[in-house]
Length: 259
Ligand SMILES: C[S@@+](CC[C@H](N)C(=O)[O-])C[C@H]1O[C@@H](n2cnc3c(N)ncnc32)[C@H](O)[C@@H]1O
Image 1 (cartoon, protein in one colour):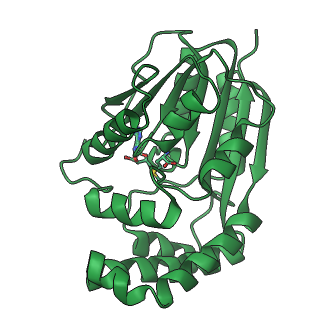
Image 2: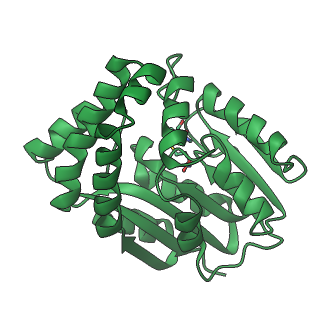
């Protein structure tokens, strides 16, 4: 675990201003709803990989009736923010937040009913090992329900994509839908479904860039500093074209461990 948090307090505050309290990824409640669609998690044990500042974990417990949710994350500032959120939202009885090391999931074999994750696996380079780990901790019949930011192919990123990744400056390790699907099927999952969310986020990201450049810009600069906001504007300016081309393609990913 690096001492330098990628999601420090400033990043958390900015992303929450953009995406909603407790959300460090786009789409909020509506996207969580789509990820869960048709699967009841009522009374189930759930883990949230890369729980960030905690809105998803709280939502899974309070709105969807999970029996328990353990949110895990590798960065301390987001875990601290998530712990606060859980407390403020009165979800402490059901939701636990754990700061963990990257690597094997800290759960026993066949412990968990549902493994959830929203836009966090992008930070985990080894999708194949992760798929085996998710399979290992799930009970038979359990679901893996996730969203993540993917790249449309497994070749060298286009120059535009390379520029975007550099502008983000995060440790993104994007993989293609084909690689994900293979990893998940090889781990033993069935009922594997991937849904491309590119057209939705391409439009949303354009609006986000307009918001960054619009009449709130000066207020944002006052609050977060010029360098920080210019960094975000640069990242969004480079993200919009790779969303438009389809090379950057957020997906929903769902799979089931057979009985
Ligand atoms: C884009 S944020 C999404 C957070 C949250 N799921 C949400 O939707 O608001 C990605 C999160 O993944 C976490 N993360 C990075 N590497 C991780 C790993 N190896 N295991 C678990 N979480 C990780 C980051 O610290 C960050 O909180």
